[in-house]
Amino acid sequence: MPLTNTQYDEILRGYDARQLKNQRERERRTANAYARIPRLKEIDDAIASCSVAQARKLLEGDQGALASLQEQLAECRSQKEDLLAEHGFPADYFQPVYTCPDCQDTGFIQGRHCHCFKQAAIDLIYTQSSLKEVLKTENFETFSFDYYSDDVINPATGLSSLATAKDAVAKCMDFVSRFDDSFSNLCIYGDTGIGKTFLSNCVAKALIDRGYSVIYFTAFQLFDILSRGVFQKDADAVAAHRHIFDCDLLIIDDLGTELANSFTASQLFLCVNERILRRKSTIISTNLGMNQLADTYSERVLSRMSSCYTLIKLFGADIRILKRNR
Image (cartoon, rainbow, N blue to C red; front, top):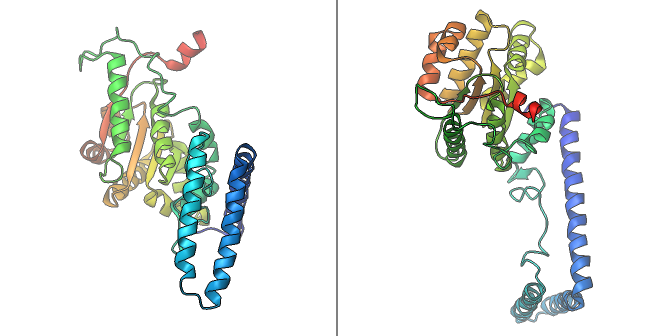
């Protein structure tokens, strides 16, 4: 990723802070366990003494020292596991604590950037950290069906607002569960305030938690970056194009709220089409219906979306208004 030296150093400092925090957590756990089970410290001290003694024997040529050490360590580990279980501690209580077990909080796997480093770069470049704050409250665990009525029926489908919302959530959860091995895209559309952005955030949270790189833009932000790259040759905007096309999931929120023109129409087709060709998933949320999308962005945009996107329509009352009135 095209990071400046300052940005790169900032990310690495973040990993240093993460390692220090997790090391302190491991020390806290150890102190807690020793206080509750003094015998654990005696066993760990014995392991240390035994290791030193056997290493000295090995250096002196005792070929049986290694086998003896392994046998004694196995016995000590077994005693520790029994004691931990007896006092209600998990078996891995003494194991190292990692925020990202894949790279063990180094940012690298076999000399290449870990997926968590990639997301850290995205967070830094696109100030996506604010999104993570939103995702703490907007996710599948906090999604509520209380604002969808079972009495309001869509005559086109015969489904109620509540049934439609449940079907939408099921499709989004399926999108997440199949993300590893199935390429797909989502277009969530419907009136203002019915949960489109919230549902997109649910998917974003689930995939970020699984280590995928996610970039979120409102339509205005996306087209602003693309225009600066095309017309102003802004270096950061030009570099951003790569991330827009290559991230695991791109979310374009509120499509249709920006000032639409021939440029936005061409850039939307470029973005949609390029990501389809690269088999990179995209979620688009919009207040526009399918006919309005065609009128605003061209038939070819609608054609690509109709053939390669799962279309999810929500309908019902404005949830923001319902919340204010409660």
